[in-house]
Length: 519
Image: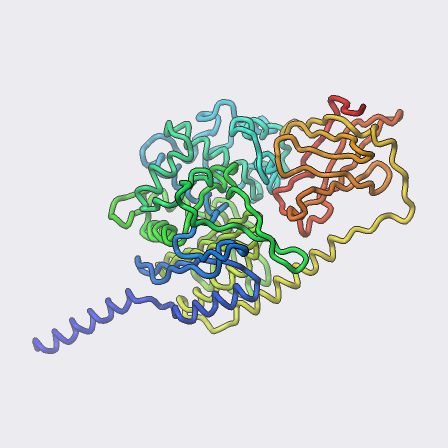
């Protein structure tokens, strides 16, 4: 009898022990990563996988910069962009745990100067609304105050929100917006008495053991040169393109991190807020709030066919969906030339983070799906080839749509001096159009990268050609004229919306001339 008991005990011990081992085929995973990098032309990538509380894979691949050839390793910093949103939500969860605020607190109770375009929304917007993309603002509305760079203070950015017209009624629709998370970051600062950056680094990253990670590129010590540069594909070639990891996005996207330290973040999330040390960063009660869908969004037939997705929603800093019958949480992050992806499957105690220095999201998705395939014991699919086919078809169609033909019957422009003026938009600020050497130039005065020339298109419409072509953000500018041929206003819109990043929200500008710069 004793022998039988001991055998059962031994068998149970072996079973329990085996559950701690990875279900991931790490050799196959490395092959998939290398295949994906090659297929999508990604110079550098880093991947970490957490399973059952353990880091089962953490490794860098390729190079940090195509020209220097410096290698990526698991400590290489990347801009995680919008994956920072979950950190901002967790920071607020910590403050809720401390009794310093409530998810349903009105934003104006903490930021009295906060205003939306609509007075009702101003009175009613809560912390919960900021974090769930349901305040009524349009996709990326106002992003030009922080993208691709800005000299504006956080106070100026938040002040500009009052001039942004909503695209849907309050709380009726999911529409992704960064400025609400900039605002949420400022709530963290006001309530905690520290800047958002200080709170994230001191109260979150330090306890998490994420000592190399920083809440802004400028905060990386000069002694640490192990960080990646983004790369943008154009004309069949990759071009290194440095940006400061969206430092101006603050609570919406400014964190720099690596996969080794992001693994600690994944473990803490999967442990209900409990740190690897055993201490509690945020409570399970607050995590339940962050992981609950506060607004739903449309799913697609292709998503159902590929992985049986039947619902999608957004919690507080997290996208939420079902995946082959499992609850899956995650987020993507995008910078010019750099993207990131985080995925959690709580039921399987599985976490995945993929960081890269090229802007092909599908390369990261292919790797994530391959890991999920192993962990969830799903039928084998070649995710790299499946997603590559869709990616390049979609990209080709996007660039086909981007071709603009001039009208057959062209109208001449007025004398160039007619359009030269200092213009003002209520939420962005001043934009200067000047005549120089028989050409018109444009200067977005708060954005160092947005300088260009105007090329005549037709009548009073021109195309803005940015000096930095890698932005892929050329825009129409259409001048509205008075009966005596004076400019009343100017509107802008992307020439190729299928190619241009949504954060170039030119269409939200309403430019009014305030001072002539013509000689």
